[in-house]
Length: 173
Image (cartoon, rainbow, N blue to C red; front, side):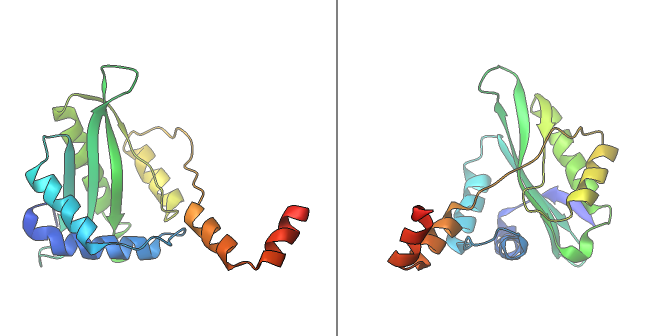
């Protein structure tokens, strides 16, 4: 297994990873747009000014087992730089192996080369939260809080499915 920078020829495999990732997320109701993923990858490979990185974990057979997309930017209140994970995903059969810690370590090393003062990562999928917490603590990270989300799209869809009588009875209390 090797951890490496993604390259343009990985685009199709990265789209497939994105599809698998979204299918597994507990609050999933967002369609993955293949063109959007491909355009994002193209931007990373052609327009990136060193502020974003995409690492992939590739098996000896050339299969992408997972990836980690991240960026570095200044805090809004300071000249210090913060490296921030945008998204990471491992296919289920590779979880619990050395891949996730190796991806994190590659990200931390990249962040150091960009002058980051801090690396911030989290779990936004609801997948393997406890195991990820243990791994991150072993890697020297500190738990700072939680991630919370409200699915506004799902709320709109539920509201649209209600008949006017049902909606009126909700507001009547």
